[in-house]
Length: 325
Image: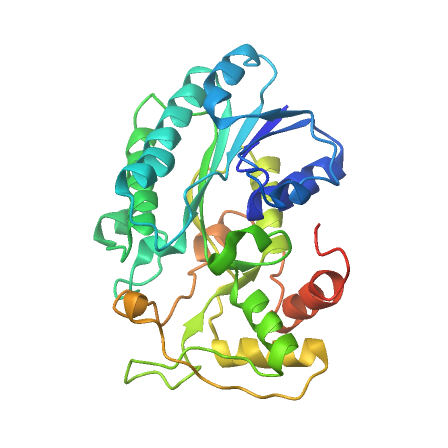
């Protein structure tokens, strides 16, 4: 059995879909569904069990002999969350407890880290473990992920570690099943809704002299590519460590807007708006994953281009009556 924490969330539910479609393993999900439509993220998939987060460790103990691997995708993922106790409890303390449980029970662990650990990018985007100590995240979420990455790397040098452990620093993922995230949804969804509403995309203006309006750059990655990397990690149990999960190519928000217009068959019309003052000082202007370590580890599948990923997202999900995977 494979357990996916956060399995009804964005990346987690896409992983659940892929695992159940492979049909090689039974899949259990641990998550909170709330009172919105988040349940639809997993409604199409034959999961073996659903676990309340409050019952996670008792469930793990009761099923210890059956669990082969844990994909820990659950987190407090808002980059604007200010409740530090909540974020540290969910993103660090719980992750550390899972690490210890998997270590004691000889269970593989793959967990979600984040490109937010790189802060403003002034120290680069190199996932070499020797560079971890130099990173300075800009927000609470990025810091909570960073301190767990550092502890995982430290514990891996001791005898207290799972038989396989991999942390994946996800860059700017987009794709189906992110609709419950509100203002934390990818810019693809935001542009799609803006264009559908008034025919215009509204990217942020630049407040940095080195970047024109719309010239802010991100490493946008199709969620299916994130899932492919996780499946490859699962199929290669000798792979261990913290790795970037991006495409290795930064693209501008203007490029993303143009891809949305093309996918929707609409004429380009871009109107820039001010970056909200509350996030302006902590805004990342450039991210680009250094992917050489993952490629050197043996990953060979090409990554989806921004144009192809956006076209697929719009065509197969956003512009349909059923946008869920």
